[in-house]
Image (cartoon, rainbow, N blue to C red):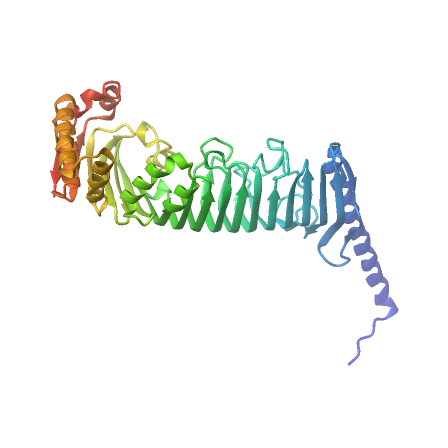
Length: 461
């Protein structure tokens, strides 16, 4: 069966095509005009072809080149507006290159989801907390400022080195917050990581949720997870297999875990100045029993609950240094909540836990020997040219002296450490009953009076 278009039907069909062509041309002209309005104030703008799919939903501009007064140059191979021009589903930039004072940035693809407008000024983003951007993603980012002027006012700051990112995606983006962010394939190098010196790093996987306070000096994050971080600089050589943290206090809980943070002390000693290596090697031998590899694991969790004007905060922390020691911390603190403050909002927004107005509380500390204490006495005795027995006797006498000056509690702690070095004990527990925080603040001005204000019990096993 054949379908024939009569002359009676052909006229409105041709009219429809003509209308579509005129609308398409109008959107293409609007895109060029909007791009010029946004960018020409920054320099000279050249635009290649602008077009719109006749019956499609993409308005595009190709081969954009913006040249600034100081010679900086931005090129964009394609600028695409997907969907309704006035309320696009996506704005896509492809093959971007920015060269500015010897520094450069390359970006294969940048996508804005539901941006609310077709042309964006990235320095004056229209998205606020009540109207965030649905999403933003990028692929193939390379930023290189090795030859650039450090301290120049560049879009990526004054980072003096090279950063590469395979992909990044973020949702619910505003000027001060990001709902979630996922990053893959990040690596970098620099001649100046400040106090760490020159070096490289790599981070294959990072995810964050609930980033807040991006415009402040102390941003926060509800949850974080990263894997296989590696750092190698002049002063630090380390790797971290896995880190996960849930800091969202709105549900009354928080937790975190660190797996296999390995510090390569042997390599760091090789990189250290010659006159520092002997002392560093002694420390490494004590901590690692000669392996030169210090491996740390940590685990923490906590809860809070509120009852009227009062609350209860409990926390637990444990860190293990393989073949060295284990450190534990437990606390249970009753707190006074601010009047009129929602407990969930209060704990979620707490930046400094020392600000808690406590009614006292109980704290327990534990220290377990996994090998390090047995290695301390031989090394120290050898460096001082005395026997181990003579060293331990000297340390016992000093511990008793500190106990007389600073109180029996401090003396008990120091004596317990000597017992662990002598192999007479393998674990020390310290149980404290704290006075209210206001009293502790006053005692901070008189540290010598602190032991007497605490109820402390030291137990050796």
